[in-house]
Amino acid sequence: MDSRRQLKVSSVIQEAFAEILTREGKALTGKAFVTLTKAKATSDLSLVRFYLSIFNAENPDEIIDKFNEHKFELKRKLAEKLRHQLRVMPEIEFFRDETLDYAFHMEEVFKKVHQDDERIKAEAVKPKLEEKPKTKKVAAKRKAAAKQAKK
Image (cartoon, rainbow, N blue to C red):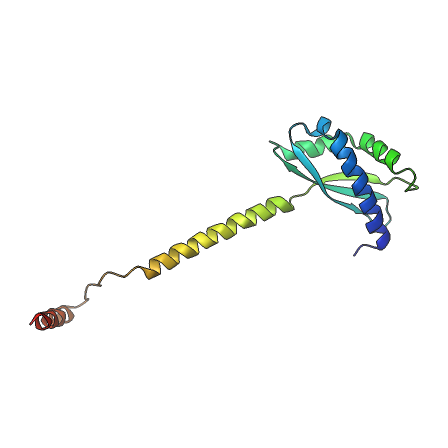
C-alpha cells in the first residue's frame, strides 16, 4: 500500500504530465489517442511509472518506445512545471496500460457465454420429436394403443 506522500507526489505529477500530454503529445503520438491512466511513484520517490492507454494505433508498443526515447525531454518539461513543488524530479518510465483491453476482452467473453446460454435454453424449450421405440414389442403396444384411441 502506498503512503500518503507517494499518493500526493503521484497525483501532482500525473496532473502536470496530463497537461503536457494534451498540449504537446500529438508530436509523439500522431493520430493515436493516448491517455494517462495512472502515475505511480516508488516508495523512495526516485521513480515514477506512467501507464498510458493507447487507442487508434496500429502498433501501440511503438508509441511507448517513442515516449521512452523522448523521456529526458518530457522529464525536463515536467521538472519546469513542478519546480516549486518538488525538490528532486524523479526518473520516469512509460508502460502500456492494458486494463481497458482486458475489460473489452472480458466483455466479449461474457457476450459469447450469454449467447451460448440463450442457444442452450432455446434448444431445451423446443418440443422434442417423438422418439422411436427401441424394441418391436414397445412399438406394437403403441400401435395398439393408437388404434384403440381412434375407436
